[in-house]
Image (cartoon, rainbow, N blue to C red; front, side, top):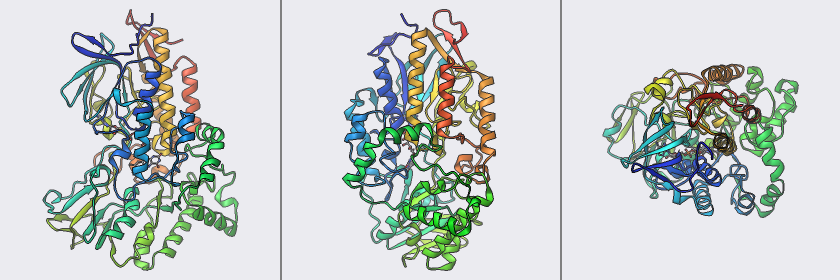
Length: 556
Ligand SMILES: Cc1cc2nc3c(=O)[nH]c(=O)nc-3n(C[C@H](O)[C@H](O)[C@H](O)COP(=O)(O)OP(=O)(O)OC[C@H]3O[C@@H](n4cnc5c(N)ncnc54)[C@H](O)[C@@H]3O)c2cc1C
């Protein structure tokens, strides 16, 4: 009999529902986690604060929202039938289609019966004597679970900017990451978009077509590459499908970012000016995130990086008619690629429209919001609607909103006060049986996230199976292993140009958030290998507690 008995149905102990695992969040991570654990015979409860599945694609319904990794790759690979049967309509599917896909997956694998929607997990407390988590929800329910798995998303905690007067604004206010479910029509309205990150870059061209006037408030110019989005033909889909085994294998095992692409074998300075320019032009014409894969040293060598950055700046100057506006749109505060590159459909060209104005707020910020206007640099811009494209409290924001109490009554927020600390981005010492999917310290946001999600889910599912089969009731990251991993994550990051950018990777968009580089930059393939080796060595660096005797023992 296993020490961690699995139950296909929830058990009731003293009136409290008991599960093998509670999963928080029903985005792509939570849905696949449920599917895997159910397949292993565990009882699982998923809590989702939204009233539907899809996570990111449930919340981000702003105009122009779509993925920036090609859909044939930004999709689950765990089911051969699914990937062979689902037809993506465009190279980069729009949000409604990705949400439809998420709903299809939920139906196809009969996931909904174990998901409780419109329910937030508010608190989770670890009972050291019983090795159980006690989980309290916004519905006032408390359940127990052997494991809690946070599938809460890296970009799911929309960041409301702290601008004076925002609450007094009399017009419509929207956040891109919390968009209403009803259609929003900006026709004939004066609209302000605040922020110029990925969501703004996607929405500006679409809003510009509807609004009578659009004013875009820019603090930091970002690099964007044309998406070259287009309808996918049946032949193109077939071409992908027939090569899926190799494409998926490459994305998992060899790619740095989980995307199938050529591996560059040269540095940018190994080519002369003309050859280099021709290569950049070819990538610019092809479009998409693989622009950064032209050369192998763009992320580590500033001189090499400058060649790519200068090329993109030139392209911006070519597209944008007004030289002053073009100058403002040319990023000058960070090396290209050190903030996630954006992918656009006519973003820069939108500024050639007579109804679009760019306002530079780099040095002054926004002074205040008035009831009918945005005041910046001493000027008032009258608007009917505000679109806050101000991003997310990334990677840790949604975790921090849950009151998680681990060993000795210590909370995760206390432990992470100086920045998140994890072993492999999966667990944090002092919080047994608590896993994070794509947590800080893992490649997560630097990758095609579905590849990283599937890897984490499979690793966690295998781990829970191992614990059950070997009679372990608790598992916990060892502090020494965690310290070494945190050092390694930092060391790898500081070997690159990434920390030179004030990016949300560093928590720089959130006032007061500690500045540490959160994702692991060592590459998806290399990271997977490390995780696999750790598992193969009996979960090296994790302490296991045997069920009956509550004795801590190293897994062998
Ligand atoms: C606009 C946008 C475009 C993106 N495009 C791409 C792309 O092209 N390629 C790519 O790789 N990545 C992209 N991403 C990143 C994207 O977040 C991931 O690809 C992926 O969807 C994350 O899935 P997830 O399940 O981990 O998290 P999410 O999709 O964020 O889901 C987390 C869920 O957890 C729920 N939740 C959080 N806290 C609680 C709580 N306490 N209680 C209950 N429920 C809770 C949330 O409501 C949410 O539904 C994009 C992100 C955004 C915002």
